[in-house]
View 1 (cartoon, rainbow, N blue to C red):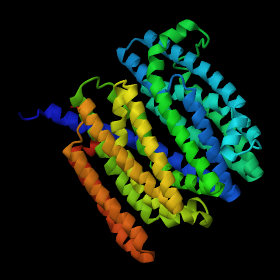
View 2 (cartoon, rainbow, N blue to C red; view 1 turned 180 degrees about the vertical axis):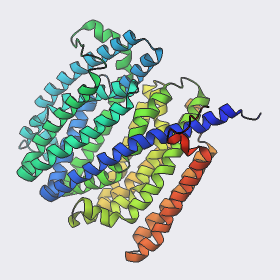
View 3 (cartoon, helix red, strand yellow; view 1 turned 60 degrees about the horizontal axis):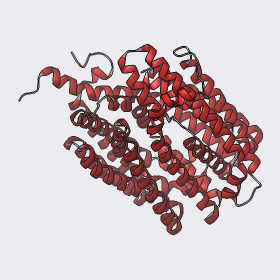
Length: 500
């Protein structure tokens, strides 16, 4: 049967919608990434690899406690609030916000107390002694503030206040840079904790500035009836919490292993490599978290709708990230010296080999969201646990054998295996199938990226650019041609309604 014009335009509109919001958050994220790199440049100059390693240890510690004590996770909150928002019942939505804020405040208080009490233990596990426990005690107030921030961002996403969400991300990046850089310059390593505390507090204030006009603060964290109302939220959150705990524990274990089997400089180099690899590509994943997940949650149990939404998101992600990664690799020696110092050039092989880490993440992340959108917390927990167990084993083995260079291979290999596992299992459980279009994009862009990685390792100087740049342009051209077939660019620019 021939597809009607309206159905055809609607399908083309899906691509436009994905690209439009990717562009919105990508533009904001570009500024965020730039400011992040500026901050890291000053950290490299005034703190060195040791200081960057210390920052990373503090952040991983905070992530571990934040993950464990988020009784209502941002993902569960977003899903619950999205459902309430779609009903159009403002009173129901406001009540759901109150329940979520109450539960979040309760766990924020508990998380602060436990993290403060456990600071000597964390010092001993991390450094093998108690000499750093005051530092871990000093960063404990960050944990409740991060937990509260997660809820406020969930409110903005679920109520489709995406402009405010983008602005809060922008202001957060500005605050981080404006607070951290002067403290790094003036106090050196001694400025790390004050920078983390002050910036986290100001970011929370900015987020509340956006959410309080929508929903004035109402909460009762010690009410038993509130706990009963939030039991469904808590059930979904438990699996996500456990997955985050596993993730944070693995990341924490990897840093501890590097400290005990290498030194804190290796942690700093590894962290710097991850920053370049991950942060520069975050524009895609911020858009997915803000727009794609609520959309996928609205598909219900329809396998057809789910497949359509996931495959379109996957294809667009691959088409956008591959040219970026390829060009990034060609200019990587220059980028490392620009963002850090020549001292950090040792991370070049790691970062280039980790390119496929982000490439396969662009493939696997839309698929991984399916379990959360269906409210299937157990499946999500099992898949995430498998991933992080594989990550832990593979990174340790590769680091032990090949040092930092081996970690780049390990990251890419782990995400490749995750993609295979998710695609195979979700095909059976949710009837998810990777479309022919998405598969073609993955294969073609994957081959071009592989050739780019080979060029960086085999060629140098002018030859690297002479061969690498045409590959990058070919990747860009392929992306442009495919997207031009899938949609009308006027839709992306808001010059045409895609459903008319």
